[in-house]
Length: 311
Ligand SMILES: NC(=O)c1ccc[n+]([C@@H]2O[C@H](COP(=O)([O-])OP(=O)(O)OC[C@H]3O[C@@H](n4cnc5c(N)ncnc54)[C@H](OP(=O)(O)O)[C@@H]3O)[C@@H](O)[C@H]2O)c1
Image (cartoon, rainbow, N blue to C red; front, side, top):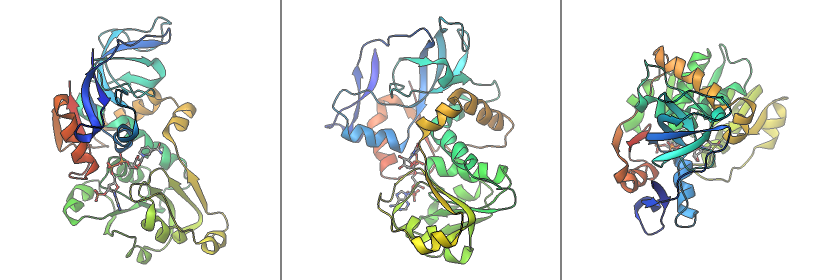
């Protein structure tokens, strides 16, 4: 069958290649994949993976064979899921039933495809934080896949959300999330005036995060999930210990989806999309034959939000 695989000589280090059919375990369903969204993380993985390695976390499709253990949706259901083995961008994929769920009729496959990695990361990162109702929080990289959802989910949790982004041309997209304030800053300058934050949901790292960490409040949580601007951060230790109980926490989605299955988290996000409480931003839709070009555009930050490709 055809699948997206790493190839260091191709645009975006990706191409469509031939791979073996998936082996389906007892607790897994075989899914005919119809589309997927791209994430920065798997595109980075493609840049360092041996040629031929399958790539792809997020996917939507239709259940071809239900799991033999009786769990999960039955055949013919439209589903969205997350391939932990990173084999999702293929004509067919085997997924444990805890890693996918049925797409409600009110939700398009395009919208559903954006949710697994970006939506679940935003959801679980915010849920690590306490007492958000009425508190001020900061979301960095608000124009990105995760940041865009974190802005909206933060508002839904009752927080006053300040969004940081670096490009003025993406401001309108971020404002559509109904955040309370938008700050354009490439290095964190300008955020001091915002005062203290109960939570900092950060996927950027680098100098932005260095500037921000002293702004945690006394019960603040900085949830660090990404390093788009760089992995090294200067930590103002004095300001941190003066917060009393301010904490910096690492976040990894694989770990979080052991605490709550991706299927359950996706059910919650899909309900919000169906109720029009959560919107997606998908400026790029294309065929998977153009995987290299789309990946190159995402890594180059050519567009805000998400890209969805169909098979
Ligand atoms: N730990 C986990 O489990 C987990 C889960 C999901 C994602 N991640 C990681 O989180 C990060 C964000 O993921 P994503 O899918 O949201 O990526 P994305 O869609 O590419 O968004 C990246 C965001 O970071 C901003 N950004 C990029 N480079 C920057 C720089 N040099 N300085 C300041 N801002 C910069 C972008 O701003 P512009 O729009 O202005 O370019 C954009 O808002 C990635 O590093 C990804 O690998 C980790």
